[in-house]
Length: 240
Image 1 (tube, rainbow, N blue to C red):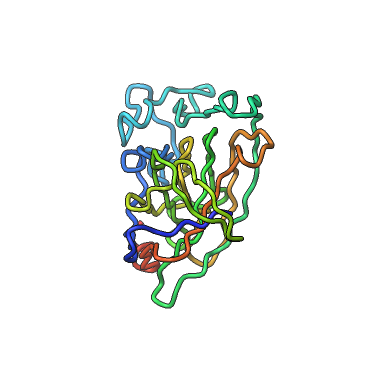
Image 2: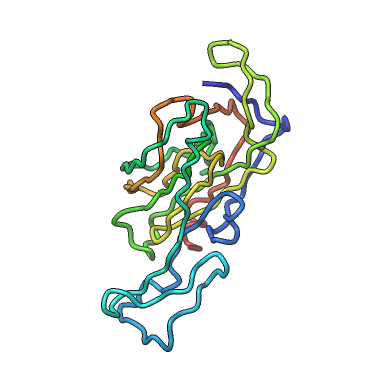
């Protein structure tokens, strides 16, 4: 695993913001229903709801004998494996990640240690069995855009290595999401592994493409220290 030292040398402190399609659009797609969680009756075709975040959400159409609203497409499925060095076609993969609450430091902040990216595929996380209005469950989405240049560094075993398009730590962002939201990381977007806040695990269905070539499926870097997300967990979750 490559070792990436944060730059600048001073501690980078991220203040998370609510996950919205517009705010997250430079990094991928935030998926959220435009309907309130308490809505349980279908609307007439003449009064279909307007998207909350145009143009990031499609207009709905009636479906299932007018008992459902269909929003499509809501997120891209991108397979760029034909452009990978192996020229592998890439195959679709659906996985489940059972993510458990993360340990915070003594003041309630999360220290970022690992970033990863998938250079040839999108990756979508959809939470299961979590109510959209549950104030006790939230999760952090921590992302960074790639730099265009390569970065010389060393692996944890001391070998010299070049990181192609390393994460731009100075432009990292953190977002807080709730159970009624899903997220798609764009192709090549650096992101931290899922960070669950609160006391309950969250199960995610994850969709992506893979080739089975480790160096093509996932790139990882280790952040030695100096990147902190100020969760203020109790206060932050109360604002969702």
